[in-house]
Length: 132
Image (tube, rainbow, N blue to C red; front, side, top):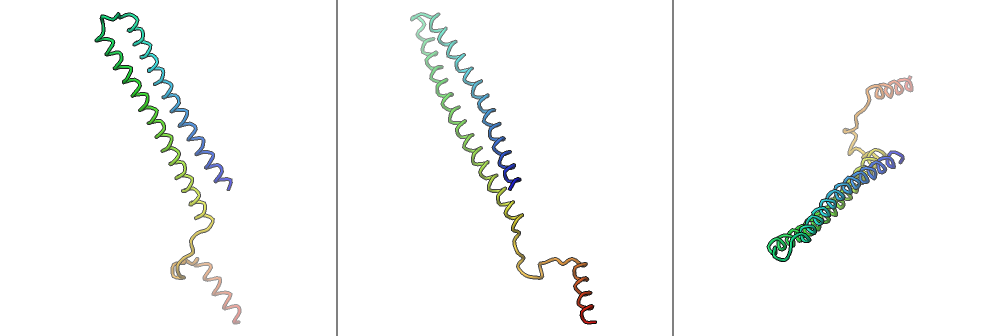
């Protein structure tokens, strides 16, 4: 049971490490989004209404940024879902391994059982001793 707990603890730690890495990537991407948004806002301030083509381009970029951010969030959610699914699969596999180790399957018949030659000899010696 202790090995099972350690295995589960290790899996949880791996998930937490993965989440930390995702958070770092997310923060970097959000910083880039904010930087780009700030840059586009500065452009809006510097350009006057005569630059309507540039303003349209900025609006398009803002929309693209919003779409990329939405896709990023969806991808992060999916990564977390997949990580959780993998964790559950690993836990189930580990439980099965522990169950198989604690309760090995019984052989179908005696022909499949490998007998230790020493064990067979001991049994035969005991039989001989009993007959004498």
